[in-house]
Every structure is written in C-alpha cells, then in structure tokens.
Length: 166
Image (cartoon, rainbow, N blue to C red; front, side, top):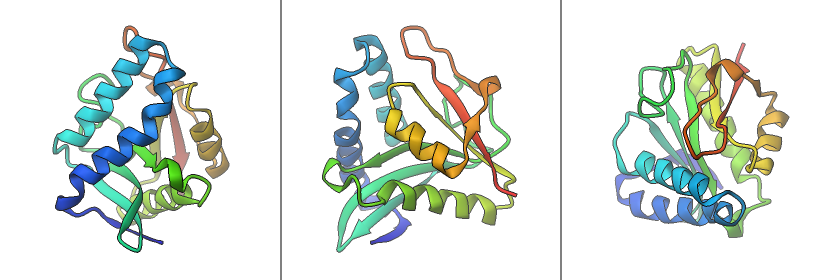
C-alpha cells in the first residue's frame, strides 16, 4: 500500500469512497446532524480550498483518502475560527479496507507533511458519533481543544482535537 497525493482524475472515485465511508452515520446521527455532515463533506470534496488531497492506494485501488488543510486555508468555510496549524479533514477509509491500517497511514502522512511544513501542531474536528475515529486520534496522542469546537444548529457538537508535533 502506498500513500500519495491524489490525482485530479481521481476526484470522482474519492467522492464515492468518502460517501461510502461516511454512510454508516446516516443511521447513527439525527437526520439534521447527518444532513449537515453530508453537506459539509460534499462541499469539502467539491471545492478547491487549497487542501492537499492524500490517498492510500493498493495496486491502483483507492482504499482511503484525507484532506490536509494548511493554516492559511479556510478549512471550515467560515463556521470556525481559522486555526494556526494544519487541519485534517474528511478522513475516509473504504468499508472493505477497514482494519488494514489505512487510517493510521493517512494520519501519519498528514503529520509528516505538517512537520515538514514547520507546523508545531496539527488539528482536526470530529463528533461523538465517530467513536472509532476518536479512538484512532487518541492513540496518536490528540487531545481535546474545546476552545476550537464548532457549534452549528441542528448538528452534533463538533469537537476540536490537537496534537503537538514537537
């Protein structure tokens, strides 16, 4: 399995992979929270926001993807204050590839790229419905950063996490 920058012609495949990865939350979240999450993901994947799109590829098959936003980018389209560190967003693993370490590889690559850019920390946002993701991030040492939480009407509280890279 290799981790690399996504190619422009892979946008549709990444969008489908991400939709499949997040589909489980339709049955877990309230309808309004799910609609908000789905819309945020679609928006992130459809617009050129200055984020690096990174994929995990095995033999030409995409197993996962993630967006890494630089601090200068508007990762949350104006609903959150701009962070002073890179942000991980829309981490997705194809359902058939879960348990293979794809998410860990993608997070490690985001951390590597953030360090290489001189960042002292890296952040992300998630919600309580995403229990596996929270466990993954805790395993890396991410800690809650409530000062950067996002509150959107009808959505689950969107909790900020941050990891020092020094």
